[in-house]
Image 1 (cartoon, one colour):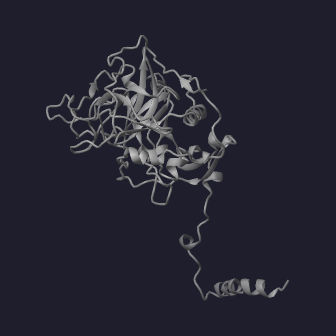
Image 2 (tube, one colour; image 1 turned 90 degrees about the vertical axis):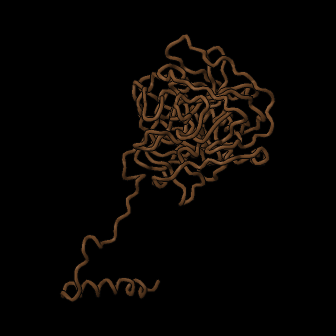
Image 3 (cartoon, one colour; image 1 turned 180 degrees about the vertical axis):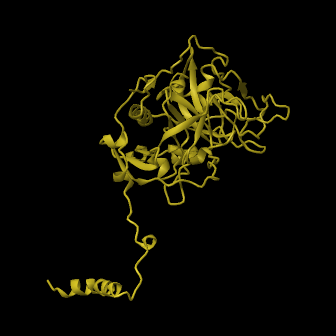
Amino acid sequence: MSTRRPRLRYLPALVAGALLVAGLVPAMSASAAPAVTADPCRDRPPTELDRTREWVCVGLANFAEPSAEPREVTLTEEEARRLDVTRPISYELGVAVSPDGRLYRQTVPSRPGLQDVRGYNPSPPDVDPEGEARPPGTATSPSTGSGPGIEAVYGADNREIRLSTTSYPWRVFGAILNPGSSTSRCSGSLIGPRHLLTAGHCIHEGGGGPDQGWYSNQKVAPGQRGIGVFPNGLKNHSWYFSVSGWFDHADPAYDYAMIVLQDRDDTAHLGWLGWRTSGHSGGFWTFGYPGASYQCAASPSADGECDNYLYGDDGTAFPVLSKQIGHQADTQRGQSGSPMYKYNDGDRRVIAIHAYAGNWGTRVTSARSDNFCDWIHSFPSAFNNHPCE
């Protein structure tokens, strides 16, 4: 091998060194020295996911601008059916963000978990103020309602308000807020002692490109009861979870996520809803937090604004596709992430997560149930147990 190239390669450095010694060029300041790029996956303390073989740290997560708002769009039945196709199993692989901003990817599918999980009521007997779901008849193709901020209200606004939000189950319905905000931007429901199920677009912009990021430092108010009123406290998030189908592809059929809250005794004993992967047709209920400034017929305010109270409606799950469920329960923007659940003798089990005007929910399937259990098992609570653990 020729020795010329190495000599020429280092010659400029040797000349620069000689000139520096002679005082003919100034020394490089510390601020101008080339920075050594740290590897957050190696230079920071390991997390729970680092101790598994199923997850790998891939660097730092990208975060959205503080002013960014969740993208809520209308999905027609034609579009939903076009999305109802077989995708690679990688679409259900998890994507997670640690409390210090590291991005993790799941390398293999979650292990099989429970497919039918009963909710946890810490203070039985359960109160049944909503009664069994009242199927309003067979729904037709969903269509967008009218009025400012309306996602889809069909005819008269039939939503009911819940004010007893220090009682189960209403305290498990969470409002998702920006740091320092007194009003919510999305909704969700506890399905574990520190595990809030919501829509993927409530925590990440979707698409995985350099211009799409996670919403940082989201807060959760279980059972919020009006603007700035948090009777069960305001909870800090710990971890974010979603899946590749949403993070990488922004596929509406994979629009679901989980916010793992900081582990606290007062959170772990609020209770939670269950879920199920079958029996999804027929009547259901959904409750969430519409935008505070929108109009709600059941509002206690003189101006009729929703004012960040908890509202819900019943409906019929139709059509039931392999990954999504259509419905005509009245909703508004801000109710994205609300659970669509079946009620039976005090037991509420989530069948989908409301995500799109039109109206559509992301269906709970076996693969998604496995993910729920995996995420709950990865971050259990020290104050309460869950069947998935």
